[in-house]
Image (cartoon, rainbow over the protein chains, first blue to last red):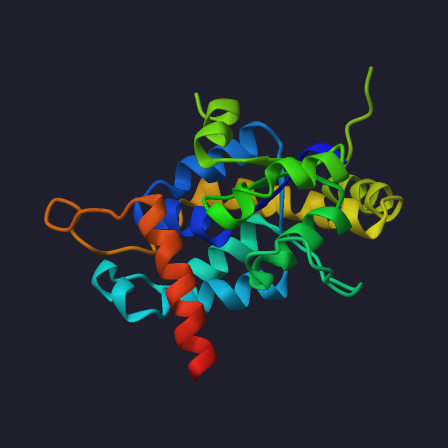
Length: 142
Length: 76
């Protein structure tokens, strides 16, 4: 597991897009030489969420957001079968699979189903940490 | 005195070094270069709403929408 490798949940990506702070995230990735991974599952989900009617008022350029995410992340194809990691929501399992397959040291999420599994996941995968957006920013935002 | 490389020689040297990297290391390197380019060019904003009129949602709200949009998508 590498301390400079990250997986960010879509709620984190969307939060940076909507609050117009995506440039701060990209600057932090560049400055700290972080590697953030993405996969098809993450990108498909991003499109689904950004197309959700309740986000329409934010006038998001969906193609632009997807392009930006692709540009700043390293794409990984999940090759092994995705196991059950998050008992409360199987839709989140791909994030853990992505982190494990890319030797990422961190998953940053604002999803309570994932955050509530922090103890179990960190016990099972000693070098993987589940952190909140606040913790991520404490580490890398100056 | 260090050798001053021509543009072609410099590119050839970079390509030779890049070929030594494995696939993931190469992808990481290319992503770092894309990020540098993106920051230099200052990409156009992907959000247009007027933040003085519309309040930005909380992370909890965004996560709730993530789950709701999944459900809506699954229903087709």
